[in-house]
Amino acid sequence: MSNMHDYDFEQRKLLSALCHGSIFLSSALISVAIPIVILFVTNDPIVKANAKEALNFHINFYIYACISIVLFVVLIGFFLLALLGLVSLIMPILALIKVLDNPNQPYRYPFIFRLV
Image 1 (cartoon, one colour):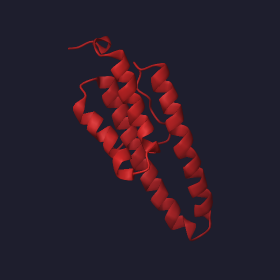
Image 2 (tube, rainbow, N blue to C red; image 1 turned 30 degrees about the vertical axis):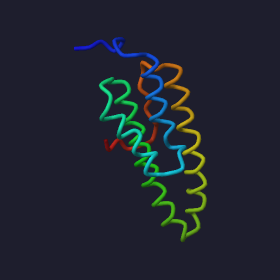
Image 3 (cartoon, rainbow, N blue to C red; image 1 turned 60 degrees about the horizontal axis):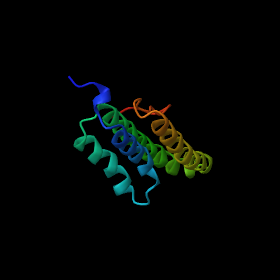
Image 4 (cartoon, rainbow, N blue to C red; image 1 turned 90 degrees about the horizontal axis):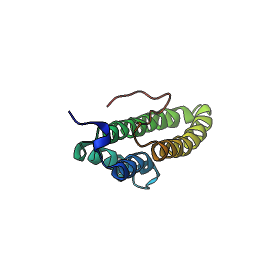
């Protein structure tokens, strides 16, 4: 079994950051596809963990956005959509900072359901 330190440090940093930063891409399809592709292409367990976490964040984001849109009809949805927009900016930035600071530790988003 391979040691975690056998993997390329710079590649780990880049791929982990790409997984978490993909949410900032304009196309929803591309932003979700990046962590999926990385998940299936890499053998690095840390990068795989970051790809799964980023994918879970995307899934949760879309679920919460749908709920907020439905609740928009009763006026509380506006607040939830604004909050969701703020969270969708802050959380990936924190993830990027963490994986770039410590590439040997996968980042875990707080308050999300892990479906993958």
